[in-house]
Picture (tube, rainbow, N blue to C red):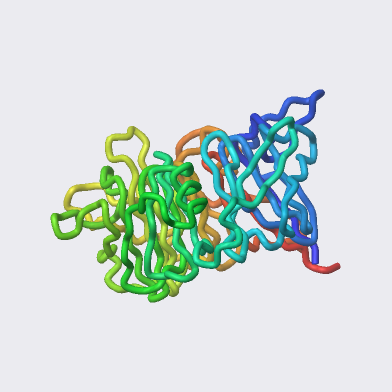
Length: 362
């Protein structure tokens, strides 16, 4: 099996293509082939760096990893055992293994490595989910308590808590009505998809960021049900910036958030005070959506027919349509794939977009 990675958008640090001393990287306004391998996973896409699992090796491209092919990151576990990675605007901060072990990232003396945190041997502190918002807050759930989320002010508080085996000052605890399935984060809010298909949000309520009504009984500081979905079961969520997208099991796409005061606003977002807080997206009069990806101000959707659609901020070329600018309405993107290739999945960083392409056997 052969996979290819196509990318577009902000590339000033070589986070998409790698960087060459002789030829400084430039933004890509159309999707461009940047990698071929038997196995490719995007573990973390940040403003200046991209962490990839490429055929069992952890490869970092961008600011901390100069070179046309990036730099291999040392890790105490095989790359395929990394469940997720996380970071901030400066780049990679750490990762979580499939066993729930917390790893921290170091680039001292240009030696890029992930190392076990001191809590690695504690069964009660195995992490199932972790998400970090732009204001530094971090939420996690442990494998032993799937209906509880712990919220920390920042990464240092999480590290102190796990180092002390949970004996330091307790974080904020949030109870969930059913087990957690997926946890995502945007600029200042968290979104939880539960195993029953419901969505719960909390954090900064401005700009309809939470997609739900705020009241004394349903404060923004606690997880609250996004009841505007009317009980529709959701199978995937994506968050970025002030936007969140939810893909229903019926392949319908719902979105909320945005910043109403902005000059540029995606037309399919809820727009007025009388609107429902969540909007059903109509792409080209009824396209079934089989995947979705979210940047800080742009959204990608993959139609059931394999066509890619994009909307939102494209100033760095992240829409992949060959232009730099904001697009209010969904546009089809001409990826220009050679014969025998099809788009399998989407991903996005803050100002970047990725297509995972499967090459059919010849």
